[in-house]
Length: 206
Image (cartoon, rainbow, N blue to C red; front, side, top):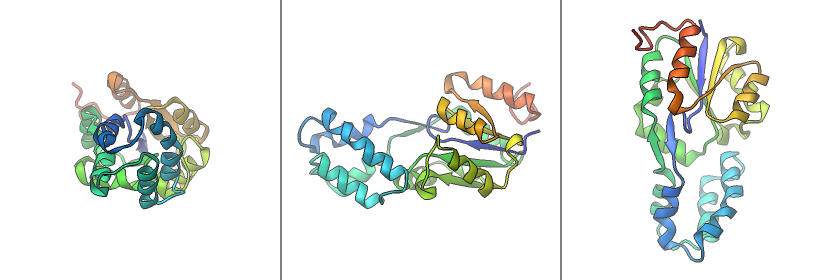
């Protein structure tokens, strides 16, 4: 049986839609927001990579988008982009206590603050590596090696679950087992866990 499972967050545990942010802040921004938003990607990457603080990120967004709304509304609009992936939430609740669970995610402090307080499912994880804290990001091999060392897991007996192929590829290079997850094909993850020796009863299977 597996010694541990490491979950990604985005589109594995939580769906996300940055379009919600743009819809909310658009009325407070000057210029063509569709053109302006393309310039935000480097700032977002810097935030998730831990190279800039949350406050500097908010300052940069305010300046670049000519945002005139309140800081509180900007923070709220940035944070409230998530919906739970109910199937994996149920799965995590079932797996808790059966096998150690961990998180490995490209994220930022503003998002982590929000989702950790919003969904109880995150209480089931024994540890986490977040890109903004580690100062490195998937799919760079270093973040997987960092997570393996931090969690104290044996890579060959640990399953990593992520929705992006490059991240799965790097996990395999780090010696982890890996599954390319899609919420539309959740049954494939259940089938894999059954093959790995997780009892059918734990997985809610007959």
